[in-house]
Length: 80
Image (tube, rainbow, N blue to C red; front, side):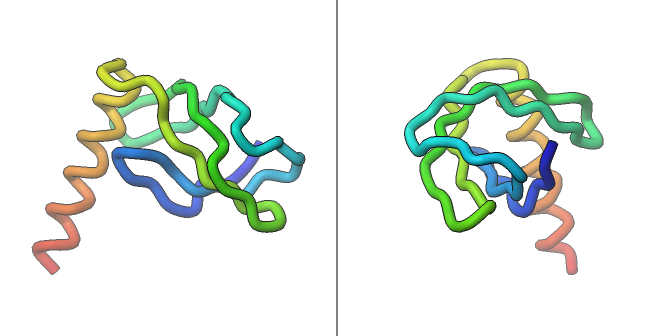
């Protein structure tokens, strides 16, 4: 279990309460307004319990949901 801090089309930052080695591939599962996402990601960075994950399933349905969600966020922020 963890908490997402930031998300983009390439990856996300999250806070988790376990230690994960750098360069490990993990499966992330989280919910977006568009649906539930389950995607493999590479652990790229770590600072205490904050991790940077890079998505490694280009072209997947999960990646499509993430891209659409990020596009919606960009549109919302642009209209502010």
